[in-house]
Image (tube, rainbow, N blue to C red; front, side, top):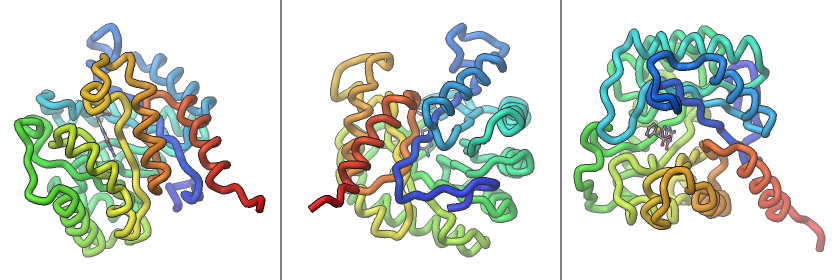
Length: 276
Ligand code: 7PM
């Protein structure tokens, strides 16, 4: 798949490193988000083997405040620009906002990653105009209400049907079918059993004919199973990602790049073994 100025073979597992540029993602909880710290984080993730850097300026945490358009532009665009100037990597932009989509693409971003699957007004048209690949994620509800007792008639079928409808909307808007990646949206309007069931049935999304991206890193799902805080969720995260790699997922959106790069290299080499 071609991500702007870089082409990636997705028969190999790929790691997407998460870079949050929301003020609440910085440890000082401070107002001014620290640009130099963000660049150091990016450098480290690339050294560790990340293929994508996912830049997000909107906190989609359950109950999070809504971020204004100008604020999101001010957070995201300078970071996209600086990464593309300094590093040879694919910048993925975690956004639902048309102006952020267009602006990021003009600065060299290679992937539009939208937790709202391009449902926001103008997002389909803006993305089609960039010619870039897009990751369509399933969410039930909005970040503000999605965890208020979510329920499904037929979970896997619902997610599949939703993503199929979004694929059709994308294709109708002029986005190439080959440029669409799918994501079950772990933690976005889902209970623990919803999350584990979707991961178990990763092949149902793959059967739609698209690559699958999984974002489970440090999420509540891992905390629910292990009873550990965010700082202790790496091993559990790796278990979830290893499991879905074996089911065919190929892009892993994670905070901890190096452990995943090593794990996936070993897993890939085992799966590709050819000796009789
Ligand atoms: C605060 C709470 C900040 C939660 C960020 C989050 C996904 C994503 C996110 C995902 C794709 C997080 C989430 N999650 N994009 N963006 N898939 N494609 O835990 O699962 O990282 S934001």
